Amino acid sequence: MKTWTLAMVLGAALAVSVGVNLFAATAAYSVLSRQDSGRPHRDDADGAGRPSSRAMIDRLSPEARAPVRQALRAAAQRARPEFQASREARRQAIAAASAEPMDAARVTALLDQSRASEVRGREMLEADTIAILQTLKPADRTVMAQMLNARGRGSGHDRSHAPAARSNTPSARSLIG
Image (tube, rainbow, N blue to C red; front, side, top):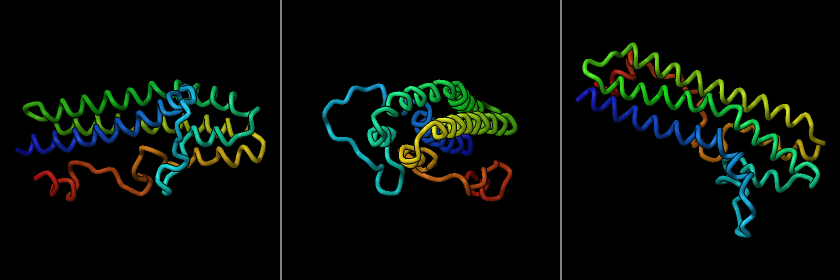
């Protein structure tokens, strides 16, 4: 039962991670490449998050919109391999956690690898965002600065203060066993 429970927990973690990664890596591309369909779109995620990329770009000066769209698309494409590597390592961790006998060290190493890839992808996106901000006039920069808000659409939570759970910590053991 412990292996099944761990597999379920890791499966849920994978689902959350995939959602966050998909947003971070492809949201700029997918939102920005769509033609305006005439339907209204949300300016804020829910009042607690940042405005959508599309809403921010719509508020830019007309001369800044196309270059920012193109730069965000390029940033997402550049970071995409890191997010794909993160998802793949998490899939492998779930498979390793489901194996008999389970190799806890391998599962932990794969989860560490997944987190490291995700962090590298986020760092790339943040560096590219800062580079984009440097090219903008003050009014446009103020609009786009919200891109640095980690609590954007789809993330659901701020992980900046949460320690990474390890299988050998008492709190993690109490959840599993």
